[in-house]
Image (cartoon, rainbow, N blue to C red; front, top):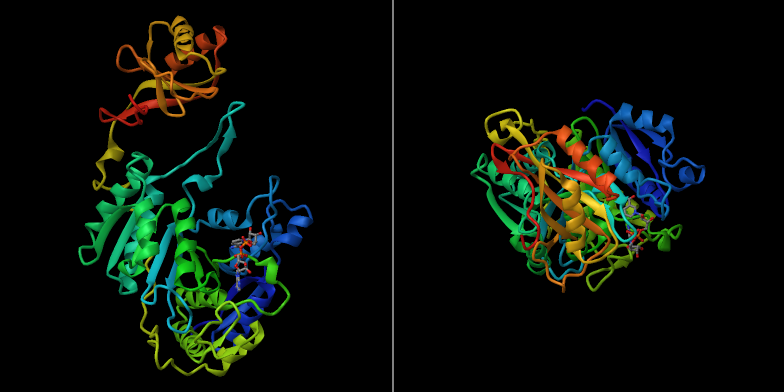
Length: 486
Ligand code: NAD
C-alpha cells in the first residue's frame, strides 16, 4: 500500500465545485490513499482585493504539499489582476503541460475515431512572460523569450514521456522560417535531443501547416511538442476534435511540484445546474495518481470511466447517437463508482500497474560540449536604437541620426515594423511612429561606454529613444535578425 499522500485541493469557480466534488467522490471510492487540504482560489479571493487570486497561507499549503488538484477558476477580465493559472505554473516552475487528447469512438462522437495525440506544451516561457510595453502612441510590444534551459527541459521531458508511455513518434511545431532565432533554437534543440533517442521517430513541422494537418488527420500524430503560445491554442483544437473540451485533463509538471486540472474553464453558462461533465478533472486526477505512483487506483478509475462511456451513460455534452442515458454530474460520478473493478469490453482496458513514472530530465546541453555555442565568445558589434518619430520620410530621420552619430558608429539601416525603409526604402511601405535604427561599430567591435555616448549624443540632438537592443556576435556569428528586405 502506498503511503498517504497529502494533496492540496482547490474547488475553483463556476462548475468547479460540482466537478471537484464528483471527482473526489470517485478518488475516495477507488482506494486512492490521499488526504486533502482545501484552499480557496479564484473569483472570491480576487473580489477581496487579492490581486494574485490566492492568499499567502494558501500559497504555503500549495508549497508544502507540492501536489495540487485544481478545478477551473474565473479570471476577472481586464488589467489590475494577474491570472492565477499563469502565476501557479510559473512560480511553481511547472515547465511541462501535458494534454492527452484521445477519441472514445463510437461512444463519444468525433470525426477522428482513431485520434490519440498527446500535446506537450512548454509552460513558462514564450510570450507568457507577460512582458509587454506600450512604446509609442501607435506601437505596443510583447516580448517573446525562448531560453536554452527552458527548451531543453521540455524537449527532454517529451522524449522521456514518449519512452515511459510506449509512444513511438514526436513531432515538433515551430515557426522558425520567420522567428529564426527563438523558434530556431527550439527546433535546433529538438533535433539535437532527438538524436539521443533513435528509437523514437522525430519530425518537424511549421506550426501553421502542422496544425492544419493535425485538425485534418490527427491519426498521423502521436506526441506533439511546442512552445507555449502555439501549445495553448493547438491543445484546445486537439481536445475539441477528439470529442469535447470537457473530457481532457491537463498535467502541469515541475521538478518539485505538480498541478493537475481540466483543460476547460469554469463554464459559468452551465454552473450550478449539475450538468457539467466532470471527465476532464477525473482524467487530471488519474494523471495525478500516476504521477505520485498510485497506479492501481488510477487504473481502476480509468477502466471504470471507459466502461461507463461504453455503457452509453453520458453527460449532456457527450450525449449523441450512441448514448443510452443522459445523467447529471453527480449521477455520472456514481455510475463510475458503481463500475470500479470492472473493465471496458469494447474499448481497450488500460494497464497502469507497471507504469514507470516519467523521469524529470537533467539539463545537459548548457553544461556539456553538446552545444558548444554556449561557450562561445560574445562580442558587441553595434546597437539597435528604437526611436519615437512621427511618420515622415525616413531619409529625414536618417539625416538627423547621422548628424548625431559621431565616429564610433555608422547608421546602417532603419526599419519600421521590421521592414527596411532606409536606405533605399519604398514609399509603398506603411510606417508607424516606431523606428528601429541600426548602428554598427565603425571598428567592427564596440563596448557599453561607446553605446552610452551614442545615446547621450542622440538625446542632445533631441532624438526620442525608446529602447535599445545590443547587437552581439557569438564566435563571430551575428546573433540578431536582419531587417525584412535587408
Ligand atoms: P470554458 O471552457 O469555461 O467554456 C467553453 C464552453 O465549453 C462553454 O460553452 C461551456 O459550457 C463548455 N464546457 C466547458 N467545460 C465543460 C464541461 N466540463 N462540461 C460541459 N461543458 C463544458 O471557456 P470560457 O467560457 O472561455 O471561460 C470561462 C472562464 O474560465 C473564464 O473566466 C476563463 O478565464 C476561465 N478559464 C479558466 C481556466 C482554468 O482555470 N484553468 C482555463 C480556461 C478558462
